[in-house]
Image (cartoon, rainbow, N blue to C red):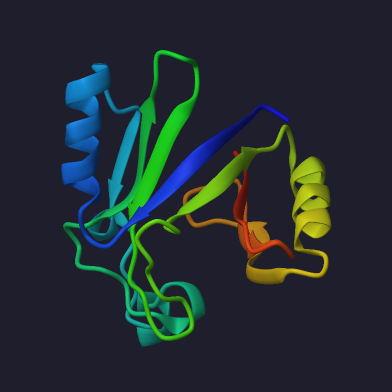
Length: 147
């Protein structure tokens, strides 16, 4: 396993939050992808995110990474909440695992989701690599990623 890092969810304020964190910790963002950067499709089903939720506006942040002086990476996204997946300030985080390879990623995903709730299967991602999201049996949200 390469790393375990916090992954924060914001309801449309990721950019402001990360500018604030940058003002405190210094440094530069290592990646910033907006929803408008995603490939466009004519299929309406492709314009939806997790569990059929409508994607945020193009200017909102799909993913941002901010390396910290400690070696950890603070990451985040702007989310859209709905009745099934409500946004709750204070509960708005996941733990992100960077797996060494796809086999390890699948093993971690399967083990963590046992008796929990798979949200997005560990599968090839539009941005490359593999990615999946789940809530474990204790209510902790995890993301498993392998580039």
